[in-house]
Image (cartoon, rainbow, N blue to C red; front, side):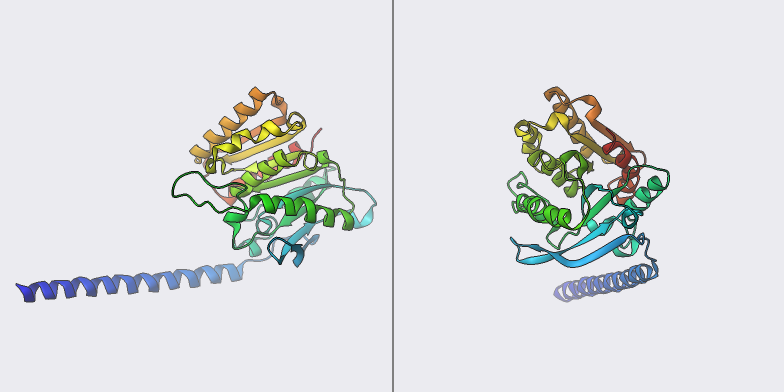
Length: 295
């Protein structure tokens, strides 16, 4: 009996080892295929996109951060000043090779609209870090076992107090709040909404893709201390398969409307057949951009 048990245990360990070994081999093969597919991707960024690596000091982290700057096609040919869109997750905005997949095509959208005589803007893409989750949370998550780490309040202050002045001194920008937009997706969407409420004298609108309102119910009270909320514009977007997220957006929309925010200042678009993905936000920007800057 003991011998049979010994062999059974040995067989189980052997099969377990074979499974783990096979899994690791498959993972290596999959990763090799992924890296090869990334290598074959071509850059899709417009010529008027510039990546400024390790440029902006982040004093609270004692480091420097990379940003991407998009300038309108005619920027070098005129003396006009332009509205500015600040977007979190700057890696995702312009180039499929940097993004390693579907990018949001902000440059293509603005270029094409400009060729038709539409609104032109400067875009500042703020690269995230390896600590993105903490960086994009302006308050701790709810729950006994939730991740309580957050530094989004510091990150937002850095954007307002360091990045925006840096941009305004180097480029021809319209500095008024109604010409300054903040945008992002997921936790970046949460941060965009937070910054719109926290800094109403700086931002006049927000593009809020699939926001992570789930992290803390305090998000539904942020508007209460914002006297300018009645004059700001908010664009919400997400996929119809993100059911919980859309319920939270509907809840936020109703709270804002009941607070007195004009109905025409809030827009909610839902992409049919999509979940939480870059494809949703790429489609969303095509609709968000002309609306958010319209008077």
